[in-house]
Image (cartoon, rainbow, N blue to C red; front, side, top):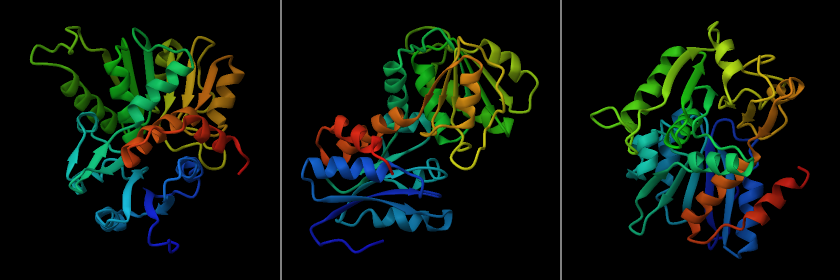
Length: 293
């Protein structure tokens, strides 16, 4: 990492890969706008480097970090404590420090997804949602949607065992001893599938919301689901914040589409406030991401 002035504090993005990330552009614009002497930098971190990278955050020069693939779950044992929502989800994408310097893990992905769906005019309650993937991002999406009252939640993953594990954790987290949710209702219908499962097509045809929570789409023309059999009633949401093959093919079938740029902004704003104690300048962050680069 480049040497910074002594007075300049640091915030880093921990992940592998990170070269594609637009978070530095967004966060540095916000820091500069508010006159905060800090710099945000993406730092490629392998699995072998993760423990050392997190330990370094205890230094006084660090305000905190974001965490991205593939470390959102692996980082948890390296932290001092978790915010309640992150503990329920079992995934962390934001690390901040409390007054005593302890490292605190948060999940700002879950509320960010719901905020961006609201921006799109989509209300999940009572609907059918299908998530592709079983990563930390998928966990955040599943917990967020379940807690807002979706009627059916399907998780499809290359390995169905990971999808089953995610939904088993979800069911334990959202229900009491009587099997009811906090609102006294029955939990949503939960379905775990393999991406290659023939049943997937029927769920895709019936779902109101399809979310890609895999990394497929960041590079080349990859897609987790070639030419998805969906119709115009479905909102296809790709957490990848660029035009993707999945979104193009969904639009060609008449579906509404949305990429993950809004989610990036909302999660980044929530993280920014944890690091700085200041309200994030959303308009500034959004404008920075709209600039070429």
